[in-house]
Image 1: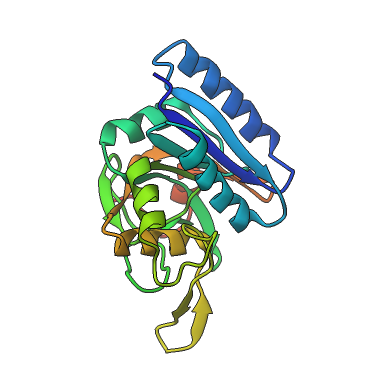
Image 2: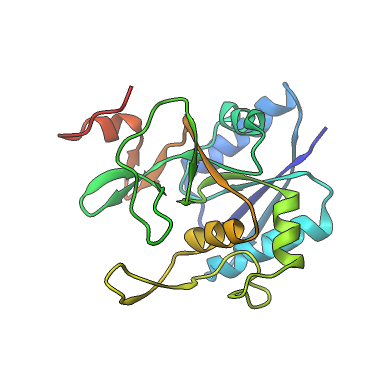
Length: 226
């Protein structure tokens, strides 16, 4: 079938564990559903430009239905991809964890304004969110096509999909949103809800350690909602 392209922006370095997991994922898929198609990657220090160029390449040079956006510091698993596909959502991401203000938190927010990570979740849930990190996110072709055909008011070519859009803190101070938050906000304004799959947890390889569910639950005063 080969209906899923892989988008991998990077600055010339991809972590070994990530590269190994990518190779294993392709091998496992070839023996299973055979859905993975081309790997689209751009090498440059301008990662946001890279991400936009990958989307353009996906739309203009492939016929794949889905773009699986991954980042250089995450471990990939085939069951994660298949679960995201089975959810049948046009924008859906696996959950992963980041360090936020000294604690480990899910890289997703339900707050429609500024990014504030969620602090509780139910395992196996597909939940609507305002923003999520793009480390392991599946996006349907129709979303990206509409975002280019009907550009967001803050979009400037070739940054139709990702940028660092201006915003405001809750106290009114101006900020610049990260490229992942900007994408989610633009997708929402284009009419597409973003979803988080809490049953898919992708290890985040951060500063010599792995941020995962075990690390999250090991923190004091953190309890997973059942």
